[in-house]
Length: 384
Image 1 (tube, rainbow, N blue to C red):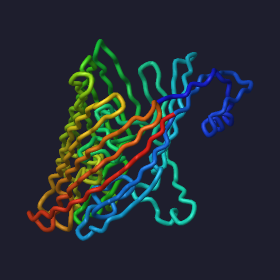
Image 2 (cartoon, helix red, strand yellow; image 1 turned 30 degrees about the horizontal axis):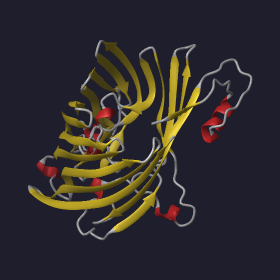
Image 3 (cartoon, rainbow, N blue to C red; image 1 turned 60 degrees about the vertical axis):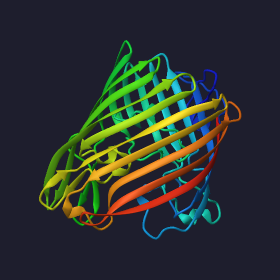
Image 4 (cartoon, rainbow, N blue to C red; image 1 turned 180 degrees about the vertical axis):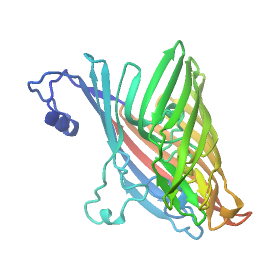
């Protein structure tokens, strides 16, 4: 993402807020001065769902029987604004970034009647310096550089995808970076009636990650340990869960590279994107962590310096006990994306994508129902 550099400024808090909105230099007397850059993008998406409404980002969990009517949708919700600054005197840098997905995957239909206004949300807000990071950003369990490049905001299923507030310490050594973090806990549990509950916990989630960077790309191994808890009738039930993942990006020459990610664990739940709500099951007396696993492969090839294509496939599997194998509960998810992106200038891109996904769910114990969906999507992205 291209950042537009600004001259060194002396800013008050009010002037900083104005700068984030209008990107106009403001000068004032202050006890300190910091260089600030503003960047972001405008992204327009034109979506045509061939087999049922799937949302502004593909909602794989919304794939249901009988929802085969086509739908069209235009939106700008992925557009975002980022403000960054560097305080060299105190060796601290900061980031604030937001987009317009606060209303979730399916925005309220009422907002489309006249003004079509979407609510903003906080993506990132953190400070970093001296190998420490404090604030909200990607979990230390997430390898962002291994993400598939898709026009669909959801990417592929089976993806480790969590942003949350954390305290992280990173120690570089030659080609390696070892990082550890304590992160915001949030149990995600399903009970025997299929009701999903989320609650705070006594202990923070803990992660550890080892990353190696080299001339061909990078690889990363990460683990997470979390405490899951449910309180009922003034009694708290706890169980520990966690998992491990391996991910990376590998270059084959100058024009082709492969991205990958594989995760497996017991009690992972929301750390795997579509497994949120399935970290554990609670039968009223016992809390049991659920095993889940997922991953993806994504291949990118540059035909020309201005033209590239991506092919990716992802999968997610949740092992439910027999008592929960009914009432359309999730079993597995599959997804695939194929796109071509044309870079018309340094700041402007156009893309076309076809995606397909399958939801396998339990119709009754040991009986699985397979449901499918697909969509066409065209996008324009302007980066500044």
